[in-house]
Length: 486
Picture 1 (cartoon, rainbow, N blue to C red):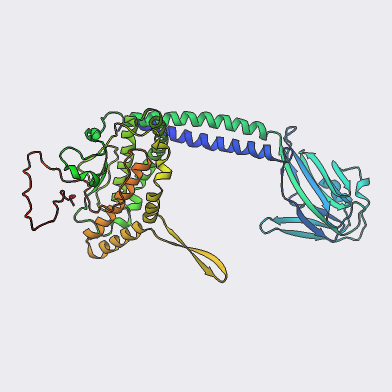
Picture 2 (spheres, rainbow, N blue to C red):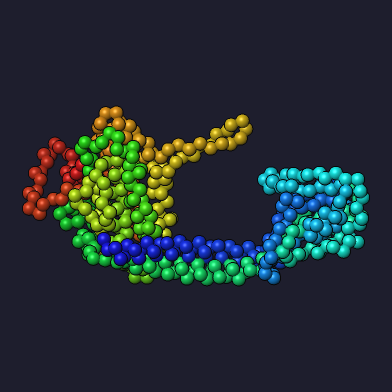
C-alpha cells in the first residue's frame, strides 16, 4: 500500500471526528442558548421546606467566585412561597450573612439529589429573632413580596451566600426555588466552535476522500464487469440465478490450533485499529459514491477499488477471528486480493448503475434482508415479567453460537467440523452480499439463499466441452447446471 495516502486517510479521519465533535458542541450550545429563558439555562422548580427562620446556601459550598472578567455570567434565582406568604430572596457576602444570622435558628442546604429529588439540610440552632431582611443594606441584590420573586446577579469575585426567608422574618419557610445561569461568552463560543468544527470537518472529509482515491487507484475494475447480471463467459446460460456478482470464498485450513482462538481477540488488535480508519473512509466514500451514482450512473472506479479492498480486508480478519475461525494464518495488511490467503472477496465492477435506485435500496428495499442479517448477527431481546415488572434478557447471535460450538469442539477434539464450517460460511456469504447491495456496489438484489461451503463460484464450462448425452425417454430428470464447488 501507499504510505502517503494511508497517512492522509488517518489524518482525515482524525480531523473529521474532531471537527464533527466541535461542530456538534457548538451547535448544541447555540440551540441551548437560543431556547433558554431569555438566554438563561433554568432548572425545574423544586420545593424546600424548613421550620427555622431562614434557608441559606451551603457554607462549605458557598458561591466561591474568583476574580473574573466583567460580564462572565449572570445568575438568576426565583422563589415563590408555597404557603401563601410574602417571600424574600437575596444574595450577600458570606461574612455579612453570618453576622446577620448570628444566634438565629436557620437551616443550611447541604446537598441536593436530583433523581429522585431529595434535599439534605443542616440545622443551626439559635434563640435570637432576626430583623426584617428587606431593611438590611448589605444585600448585593434582593427581592421580596407576594408571588414569584426573581433576582439577577452578575458573577463577582469573593464568597457569597443565598438567603431565602419569609418577608416578615417569621419562622417556617416553605418555597419553590429555581436557579439559572447565563454566560456572556456562551454565544460567541458556540459560534466559534461551530465554525472551527465545520472547517476541520470539511478539511478532514477532503483528506479522507483523496486518501481513499489514492489507495484505490492502480488497478482496473474486474474484467467481468461487462457481463452484467447474466452469467460470465464460460458459465452455462441457465446459471444466471445461481451466480451473484459478489463472491466470498473461504477455505478451511487443516491442522488448526486447538487453543489459538482463545487469544485471537488480542492478535487482531492491530487490524482493528487500522480498519477503524479504513471503515471511516469506507462510510465517507460510499456517501460520495452515492451522489456520483445519482448524477452519473457510475461508481467511481478508484472509490470502488478502495471500498472493495476494505471489505476484503475485513473478511480476511473475520475469517481468521470470530466470524469463522477458519485459519491460523495471520491476515495480511493489504486491500488487494491475495490468492495465497485462504479467504477472499470478489465484487464485479458495474458498468452502469440505476440513478434512482441508489436512493432507496440501502434502507427501503433491503429491509427484508436486513431483518435476516439481524437474526444472524444481532442479539435477541426477550421480555419477561418478574414480580410485576418487565425485564429484558439477551440471547447470543446465531453465528456467534455456531462459531462458539465449532471452537469448543476444536478445543476438545482438535477438529473443525466441515459441515458446521459450511453453514458458518453460508451465513457470512449472505451477510456480505447484503453489505454489497446496501453499500451501493451492485443493483442486483441478493438472493434469499444460504449458499454453504467455502467456494462461492460456479464451475466454468470449457468452450470445447462436448454436449451432454441425451437422457433416455424413461428418465425425465432435467439436466442440471454444474454444481457450485465445495
